[in-house]
Image (cartoon, rainbow, N blue to C red; front, side, top):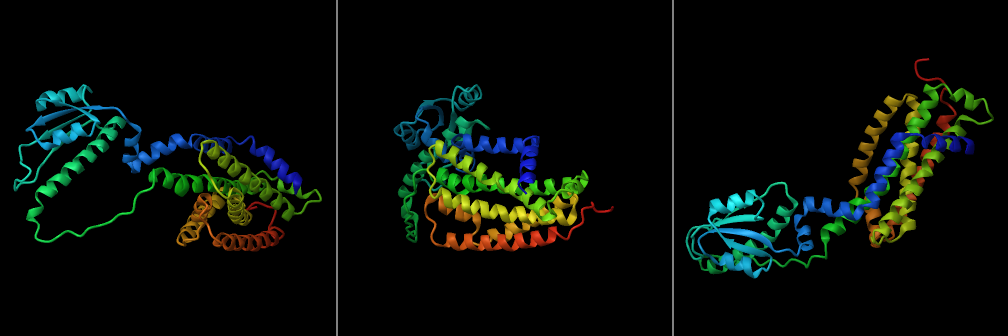
Length: 354
């Protein structure tokens, strides 16, 4: 079994696809702080606002209003009174960061105050400016609501929201998305590898050569399983180390690795069974991918799924349920291992169709 494992590990070093996948994960882990800023800005643009202390030049067209005072008092904008056409032309030349047109609607007027905002599209600076302007608009809206509150027939319901944590977008992205996906990526890669390692023995007609030695078919399969499984803690540990070097504190690293390895073994054994049954790479990969998608959907329907457990462990919030889930996963690994061992001794050494 050890000889098969060493042979497969040497062959994996020559696989360009696997190396590229590992390098991609390395890039994600190594530059997680940079990616974190970019990805969180996609679903939470307000997270970018606090990184900028620059005063942005804004064109103000239309009638005077308290909004102009709000812009100046925010200490984030340099406001210029301009004609609308001149301001829009300056915006097109990137001499201004934004242009707004404010009509002459009074604060206590019956009609709503309609403000037209002109900004640049597909621009990071424009995203920051829009977020900062939104804060000013909300303050101005609050004043308008106060002035026009006498029109209300019913008192609005007061809502008390809990204070938000510092940088919630970053926190949720790191521990809720980045760490679980980054750690379970080696599991998926290893499970796909076992299919290639088993089916290539059939397709290249090298299985008979291996079985001509004192090794049994079960030992050959377990050697390949070991070769795929040993990559999981190495990759996962490396990702955790790189995230730590990015000054991201991760709790319960040992428990996290145990959970990842146990779940990875489940996928690897399922992949081995699929490869032994079909003995042809394309069919085995298709059936395995479909089965994994269905399995993941079923598992993710439960609160105690592996992704949630990893997130809870990384934040130090996991309770005793982590050990119950680990025990259930280990039990499942034992059942799949017995099934794989028994099935490996019964399968044919010939590819299908021969």
